[in-house]
Image 1: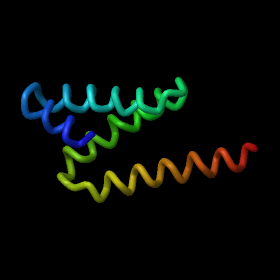
Image 2 (image 1 turned 30 degrees about the horizontal axis):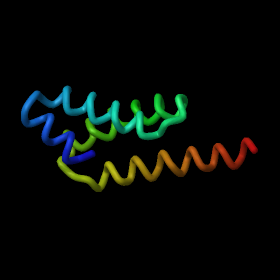
Image 3 (image 1 turned 60 degrees about the horizontal axis):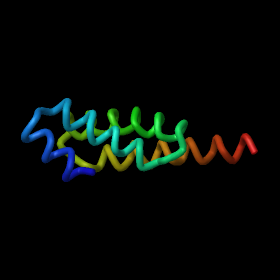
Length: 77
């Protein structure tokens, strides 16, 4: 996803890279509700990457999201 984002950003602009890579990130999650959430998370992750220039906060945000989703799933079962 990072390669696609950077390729699109360098050729078509930051927001095209963010939106298109986030859309693909969402589509790979297949389940419609998860796809919408992943698309929104993808936008946040790509924006955070653009602002920080580092993968560390991006990895932390993705891990935190997965942890919260996992805990919510566990507690709601």
